[in-house]
Length: 246
Length: 148
Image 1 (tube, rainbow over the protein chains, first blue to last red):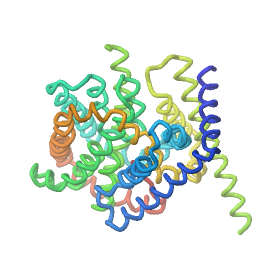
Image 2 (tube, one colour):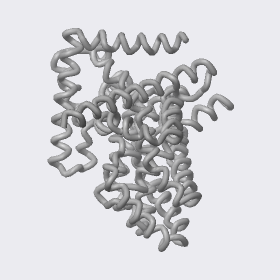
Image 3 (cartoon, one colour):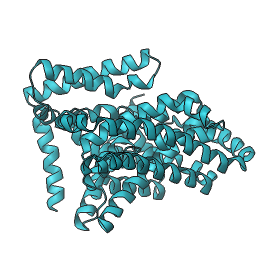
Image 4 (tube, helix red, strand yellow):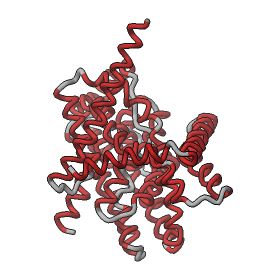
């Protein structure tokens, strides 16, 4: 019951922060920046590097810098945005539900492909950090880099990572994945369009899926499946493994 | 006209209630049973099972959730800016991070694609037909993916 109260309080707190002068100002700045970001993304025909989040974060960051506002103050003022992330994560159930029929058509081949991608991507990334002696919080965060941002933030928090870093790692992973994908598919001789879609969705999550949408309906459907299934399983398995062996 | 609008406002409220309800149920469940899983994930699975049991709610949830899902990127902004608090750690480990993200992501993309291509090659002719039918179906459904 305490948690529910806390969550309810968090919502009231977020609303309270919103209806203050700095709350309204910063949320308005965020919305405006996002609007500019969306339009840039559209103008550049959806090139991954112009992902709306990158542009929005840069613009808001600039505003913070020039107004000498601390990030903590901004986070408090715009806490409504952050709080909404929870319910929107829950709403991911909708795209997953809509992909279910398709999943049943493909069965184990699809599941195994996604499972392989979902295991090797975080493990190799973690290994790179481990070999180069990065701090353990960063290693833990990297384990969640290939899943969709909201789940990655929650999962990394559960296993002792840093949610803010997780968000950045995830987005950069997606952008890099979407940019290098054509070259990599050529190099590895992946010509099958469905296989390309699965790889994009599983390894480069939603940014990869956005790229897959440009490649065609069949590719984007597979990418969405990869994104959903890998996201759910990684977010389930990581914290469970850590609570068992951690 | 008025009738339709009223109806969609009602659907919107029902959809919102379902999503927020599932969110609170998820958090309550993880808290009560001290589960090591994120509360939102439990809420997601709860909403998913609700949709399977009562497919009729898909309409309501879609009415509410499609717009926030599409513009999810905006909600990450506060979290992403928080990264500046870890700037020195990032700089100290810049090489490791670049290696982990750029190199391994590229290789994993190739490997995953290559493996699934081998797995699918046996079944290709059948599945191509299936996917065509499925995409036709989806066009009606105003398909959505989350933005991030």
